[in-house]
Amino acid sequence: MGRNIKVAAVQAEPVWLDLQGSVDKVVALIQEAAKNGTNVLGFPQLFVPGYPWKIWTEAPLNNITHNVEFLTNSLARESPEMDRIKHAAKEAHMTVVLGYSEREGHSLYQAQSFIDPNGEIVGHRRKIKPTHVERSTFGEGHSESLLNVVKTDTCKVGGLICWEHMKPLLRYYEYTQGVEVHVASFPPAFEKPKDSSWLYSMTAEGSQTACQMMAIEGATFVLLATSIVSEANREKAGYANAPYAKIPGGGYSQIYGPDGTPLAKALGPAEEGILYADVDLGDIGTAKHFLDTVGHHTRPDLLSLKVNASFVKHVHHD
Image (cartoon, rainbow, N blue to C red; front, side, top):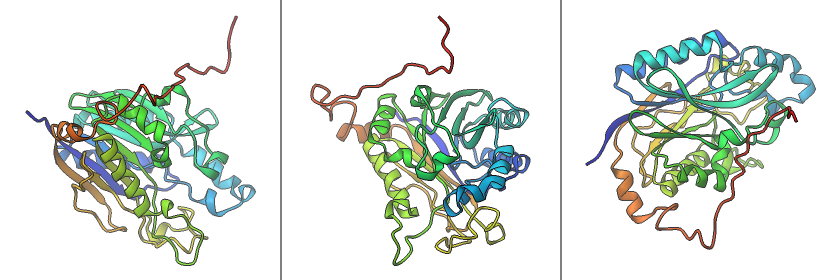
């Protein structure tokens, strides 16, 4: 007998560099999804306060003012702003996976918080290795960020951020935790520019391919959530010196079944909304009957994964 739930993935524009406006929009999207009976809702990468694309297009010394503004408008895990989001999830009786820039003191981390239908953060993680120039702005997640699957009232929900989906060992460890619905939080992305050294893996289509492969490999539902950029916000979003960015655009959200089937009608790249799918969690069993990469379709006697789960502390007392 299957378990039927409704899942949803956001495709929307952040309120760039505006913490209070970002929280308002997150709450509004949760309320909109609640009206449609959503059980699990996934948000894009760094939706609060928007992915800082300027770190890719400007020299670090030219970005100091921007980076301070970005820090100021980032979200603390324990804060009145987060309390508003938690309350909205509770009112909606919904599991929410929120992608945001987490501020802890004067350091920033790319974070996902898993908020349950009781309005509690039951899981929290940070991107374990920021990508390329992201390392100039964001710190790294540690061992606690490897525990990226939580049990909710409807299913086991997991999550990864952007190019964490390119890390085979990280994906594999999530599969061992029994993920059923995975939230893939990604930033805006575009087509590959002609006559450029831009990587296909950095395009919208490349990101979709990675998420579809994870659905197949892990026999899990995948909610790919992405942001968009409007022409009015091109400069504020950091795309003033990015002629390759087809703005308005950047969105490529989708929902994949455990055999890789796209389950939602895609929105246009510049279209804001929420994608929905009514899913039967029993379909996971069917997919795993053929391919269970942490069960009958593996050889742990030949290949296995070593995990360092020790908790890292800044200070140790004898």
